Amino acid sequence: MKEAIYNIINDMVEYLDVSQMKRLHEVLIKRLTESQKEEVKIIDNCEYMNMFLAAKKIEGCSKRTLQFYRVTIEKMLSMVEIPLQKMTTEVLRKYLADYQNLNNCSKVTIDNIRRNLSSFFSWLEEEDYILKSPMRRIHKIKTGTIVKEIISDESMEKLRDHCKEARDLAMIDLLFSTGIRVGELVNLDISDINFEARECVVYGKGDKERKVYFDARTKVHLQSYLKQRTDQNAALFVTLSKPYKRLKISGVEIRLRKMGRILNIERIHPHKFRRTVATRAIDRGMPIEQVQKLLGHSQIDTTMQYAMVNQDNVKNSHKKYIAS
Image (cartoon, rainbow, N blue to C red):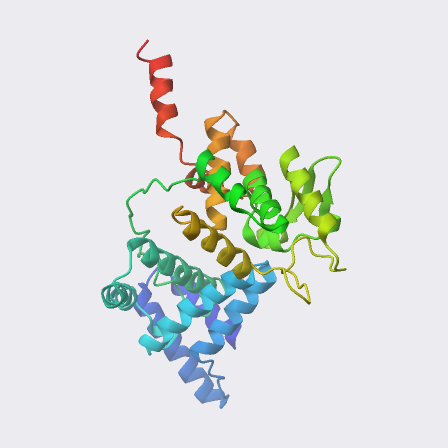
């Protein structure tokens, strides 16, 4: 019966608009099930959300991404108590506007929510649970371009000098040398490190494997740290106290934030190391395609967002190529 309904709907696509198509769909289901005395299984909004999250998990989304999807969708479903099949563009646009006013959040935050909801409704459309995504007409929210700071050479030396633990010194040097994500850092095992070639294999988003490379200083500090270790944990970085468990993302973030506060260095976090690596590489002439591969980005536009070109280099290039 379901196939017959969709055949009828497909035949009527060119004659009816979206609202009429939805009404036709509802009437067909009601009348045909009544005539055949079939019981239509009702799927509630939360079940659709769980099905979506299961699909995204199979696609390889990380736990953090899945949690972000869940929180975003659950919040929307709690505020808009309408069956997903009856959601309209106007309802969702009002929800985003109300959310921004209520929480006084930035345009960037609202656009992240918009993007997550768009993924959810696009999936519902692809799976034929709805006729058309109501998010299609809610476009990307324009945000001002903010040039984010990177870690200066002076700040990096301060961080190194302040490190009292061999682990912390090895950790910040590996971040500064490779530009890996903090999730990739904490998932590294000792066996992943090739000291002779000064490289290691990391698994990025979607479990994509790639090689990253570190400098001689990082090699020395890593070997010094591992030489001091007395535990048998396979993890490259572990906690400082027993039972020496694998270091977690939050542990890295808290440690760096504390070091930044002590040294009066603003906003020191793992992602800032990654942005610094990208920017330095671009400024020194590394082709953007190679920076993209180094950072493990699937889209080159993402790499360009990370790599904010130093304004002093723009000025020097202007003198060299234009003003001379």
